[in-house]
Image 1 (cartoon, one colour):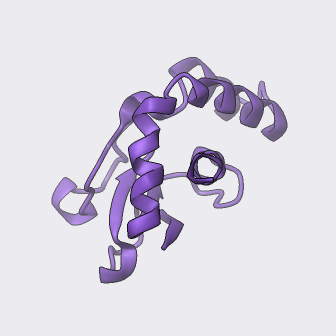
Image 2 (spheres, rainbow, N blue to C red; image 1 turned 90 degrees about the vertical axis):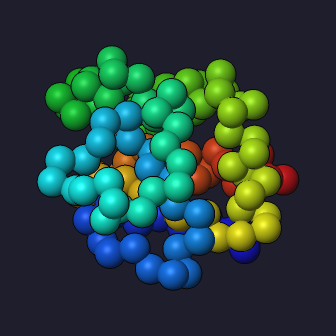
Image 3 (tube, one colour; image 1 turned 30 degrees about the vertical axis):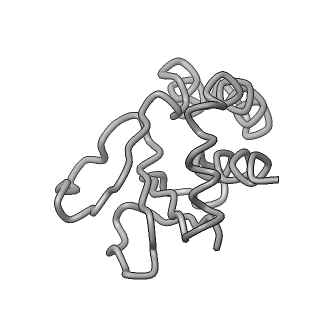
Length: 117
């Protein structure tokens, strides 16, 4: 199976599999029923300080990625079942960021793929 990424503003699809919201805050303008989220591990999202520093431009992508990976290591046991789930079925990491290439879901997918090995 595998791990996909999808913006929360895109309609859920049958082949999304297990949908996981990876943001600490619920996205504005999205009804919970419409998002069809199966899991929301808020504690594994970037810390408020890290998120705010990145959005304010105080950190570049590389620094954000390094710091977020360090935070994810402290949640290894919470994330291991999600990595295992991706072996059995499709897991879709759902995020609100506009930038689809530089966001926490991209980093989390890389980390989960490392845990799967």
